[in-house]
Image (cartoon, rainbow, N blue to C red):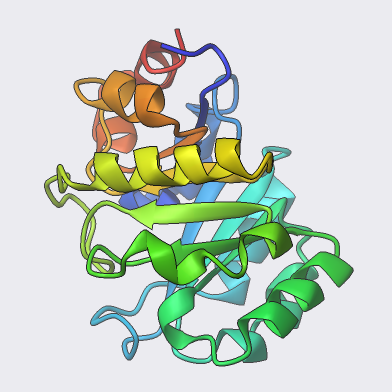
Amino acid sequence: MSELAKVSPSILAADFSNLERGIKKIENCADYIHLDVMDGHFVPNLSFGYPVADAIKRTSNIPMDIHLMVSNPSQHIEGFAKYNPKILIVHYEVCNNLYRTLQRIRELGSKAFVAINPHTPVIVLDDILESLDGVLVMSVNPGFSGQKFIERSIRKVFMLSEMRKARDLDFEIMVDGGVSPSNASRIVEAGADILVMGSAVFKSEDPESVCRAVKS
C-alpha cells in the first residue's frame, strides 16, 4: 500500500457522549477528522452543525475536512469556513453553480472538493476537474454510518486516477463509505489518496492501530 495514503476518521461513528475521548484516540494517527453535516433533506438523517465543529476545533489540532451533505451548500460554506477546515466538500448533485462554489471555498482558505454519489458517473466532472482540489467518491449511499462498501466504487477511483494522469492534474481522490483494513489496499492501488473511515475506526478497541494498518 502507498505510504502516501491519508486517513480521515469520520466523527459520525464516534461516541458522542465523550467526543473528546474519541478524538484523543486518533490524534497520533489521523491526517484529518471527517465531519458529515446532514440536513435531513439531501440525505435522510440529521447530524450536527456549527457547535460540533466548534467543539472539535477547540479540542483538537487535527485538521478538519467538512462534508456538506446538504441541499443548499452555498448557504453554509462561510459558516463552516470560520473553523478553518483544511477541506470543504460539496455535492455535485445539488450545486447549480459548482464553479462559483468551488471558487468561494478556495477564497475562504480551504481546499475545494466535490463529492459524487454512487449513482453519479465520473464523467459529469470532466469540465470541472481543473477547478477543484479533490473528488470524494461516495462508496455507500450517503446518510448512514456502517454500510457495506459498494465494489464498483473502485472502478470510479481508477477512472479518476487515469483522468488525472492523462491531463497532468494533481487533485486528490478521497473515498468514503465502508472503507476498512480489508479493502483499503485495493482502493489505494486504484488511485485513492485519502480514506474516510468511520465504524472501522471508532468501533474498534484500538482505533489508532486501525488507522496505522491502512497507512503501512
